[in-house]
Length: 298
Length: 285
Image (cartoon, rainbow over all chains, first blue to last red; front, side, top):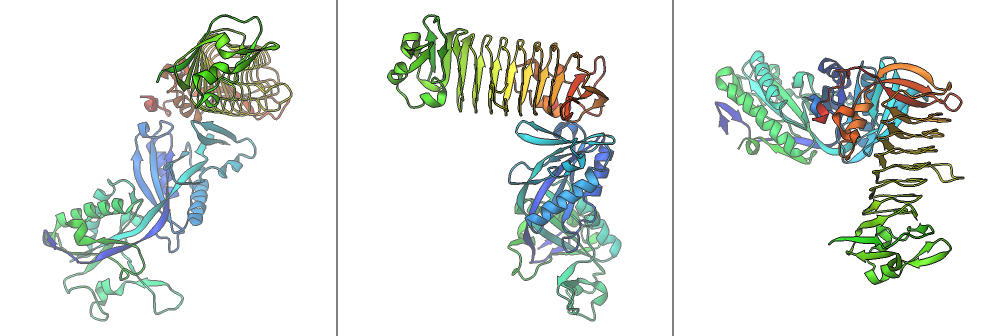
């Protein structure tokens, strides 16, 4: 399959089941909601060492938030329910509770309820106040700038993590430009995040390493500087490869994000140095979710 | 199916215990069986068809016509469906109500909504003393649900209240929110003496400045984030509380009762003050 001169590999991205939740952060204005959301989703690029993968889903209009203030919705993904609950709580406590004028709400009502502000309330040292409004429990925690309002729990749902595609280009600036264009379009898709810095990862990994202590190491088959010394997957003209990783609440959400992302890359086309689109997988043995590139772009 | 309607033929000299006539107890009963139910009337029993003309068949939608102030325990422990009272109701209206909707077109007597657990109870007229309170000797009053009173309420509204929301469009008598454990009482009109007497936790939300005891301390003026959410939850009600013009988020906060736990609050709308722009009314549109 070739789109605008870009070859789409006959391969698939392999993804895994994860647990996910959404939180809504509001503040006096969008600036402070965004500051809090950025802090909460910081250092959350990969579950390998961050404990979770998190990102900003989108900016919310005041008419969409529970308290009528500007807000930001964030999605947090983890491999297990316990890990997700722990990450959510520590991040909410250190990054939202602490952020001026913030309030924190559940972004998913269904599913198993996990603590959002349920335990943060103890920061109130006995002065905290519970309010049950329209079936939902809220906590009002007195803080130095006024009151921190938080919903007690949020819903945890089954999700999919690790959808991806690789952009193979003739130069590093061209690969980056294409990925930036893809991220702009993919950010418009609801229910997904691209957890790596700016949505793009340049250090794709393979499973295993020559060093027994390491579970993963650089994906040498896609490293352009190793073309002559390893079993490479790159043709001579490829000088740079970048990857976009997608976590989504459902497989369909990731399908959609991959489609618009690859579409945006292909629009730049061969004339801008984009030669191939590929994807990372482990032979299909590890992850139950397979995203076949040619099916998605068909 | 038309609503199961009980129309009182006459008023009794003695009080009547109406607790057998609730939706869940009449479910699957024939009209003949319903007519044969005996209600306690003073020291004697009275058959339902002796007191009421019965029509309609939907036992999950009950209407009581020509109701008068001696019909006690209407909607007691109502667990489903809807009951509508045309006229006045006696004491213990909606006592221990668990779910569903209960509506009184007129005024009701003592202990309405006492120990209520859930559901929506609306009183278009006035309510007597001890609205949503605990029965004498019991420790916890209303534990959930919403009570809406369009008229005035008597003394001790919300006495020992544990949870839930009590909305009063008119005035409240003395000792409003006394011994309250938690929950929310909102009063648009005036309040009497000893507001929140021995109140432990919970919120009394007022549109007018009350006369407060010395054991309530001024905590200053604040913009509270939970108020827009609270008001938003009222928008489905047929009430002044549902109107956007009734809402506010700037309040003066009084903490008390310092002679008790001191974790309760009286929030008074700040007069002549604009809403803080940070909390837009967009969510009401």
